[in-house]
Length: 368
Length: 220
Image: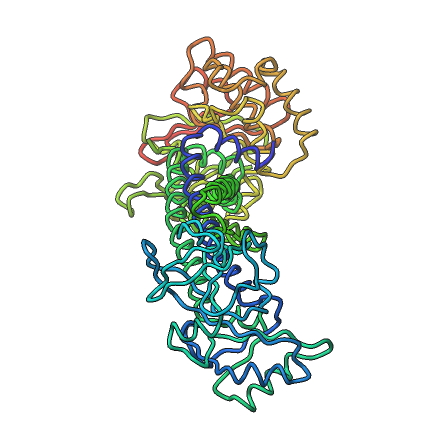
């Protein structure tokens, strides 16, 4: 018999109340893990699009969105001539419409881009990737109901489908790959790309690229992939949104814990008084209330984790979302959500614990 | 064991005066009955002795301790004072054994020692067979004997009783009170007990009568 067995006995005898408290926390944890996981997954997918076997990204300085970035093509040529660069690949991001599809992501790339080289070709081949012909991701081929040799309507033009590729990344799998020149023409961006991905030559340092860009093209910036992920405002917004939405869910969870613990204290005022008469200190009484709150929280974390895993698994199994839902729920996300849950539980138990610890046992024993 | 000098206590911001200049000395090993009508201040006096209520004025010294704050109050209740109430106030969802171990948890005592002591006390009070039962499964007399055992688990030198047999029927009242006196006297403990029952009070070493917050008589 210990303080913890007292705590668990009390939780056990008020199962419904305990379950309600734990459910509040579980919903908070599940919401946070789902939102953070989904958005984190989306960010990771976008990072992979940019990375493409390269260590660095060059883009226009001070743009809020890479869709608005314009990197002159001559930078690609110049970069490829530098000894510290192994490969430089321009990518032009664009959004096109297709019949029945208001938004289709379009990637303007060169035929030698690693994306196409590494892709699993379901039909056609990279040899056909020229002129205004396009290669469709598998999902895009599905919703455009097109196969190699068909013509698809994209934006203002019609394009022959040179092939269909299966990509791991949902954005790419649901996108259209267009030869860079055709893409630049279609979107009136002749001579520009959105970004240039840079693979460093063996033994070279990213600082060399940064210095070169700063010196030769001061309106551009070069960042390592990790630096880019940390500093890109869209990623920051997405990540912050995820944690704020999750935090709001926790606020509600916290209220549920507070409510549970207040009920728990008020329904056994005499018991708390007796515990005090038996020698429990105020700290022990408060510890008992905090302990109950932490235990409720632990059930909630477990429940929330299972709930979020189940929910995300369900989302992943929906054919229309395959490739788009790549939740990124690792230990970092789980421990972040757990830490928030514990903080919520402790804050939620503050008032009940304070109330219980301050109870005057003599008066509480007269309480009806 | 108990030294109380000119203790005053009021409630409701001084509007209700419950103790009015009480002086009391109880020696170690004495059994004392506090008698008087409801509202005369018996329970409040017991609470003041146990440190559960702070007096407005006057000094209180219990088991050699002056209650100055939370630390002294907790130490007193953990080591020197046991309290039995009219209602058993056991936790209904715990077994009798678990209830009796609550003071041991509070004091951080050793489980093995506590279980040995519990076995001894349970044997003496006739509830050894009920220790594993939940409180709600026990009779009124068994519950009150359980509460008595709980109050003695940390081997206090002073036992306070607030109408400890007041809620029991005739047979149980006699049985529980006899046990209480035996357990107190066997170990040389001190007992201060509030009671309406003059018959029980007369079996104590001293009978103190209270009226309107004052001690009006103190007889051996």
